[in-house]
Image (cartoon, helix red, strand yellow):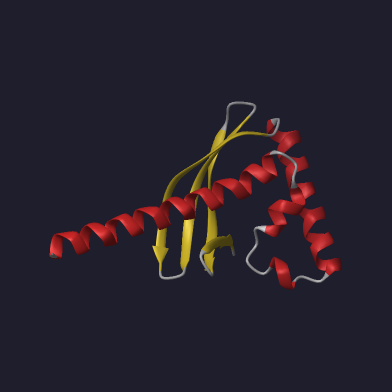
Length: 120
């Protein structure tokens, strides 16, 4: 009985961890594809942003993507390589690869909103 309970807990943690990692990857895929509104929509408090603030955030994300394009030729690959979860907060580590073959690890703070993980 105890073994069954432990297996269920491990399985649910694994599924939650997979959802967490996929949420972070999806956010950065929006950035990669130029879908800046969707990227901003993945922020936990996006629904409470004023229209003006949302527009400013979209502009900032667009400028960031343009800088990455200029410096590195843009993003070519995003892969979650690690994470830490403490309650409803987490940190996902993404390996981001650029067109110029360089890469860097990016830390993305995340928070659980209902059953979904969103960027913090």
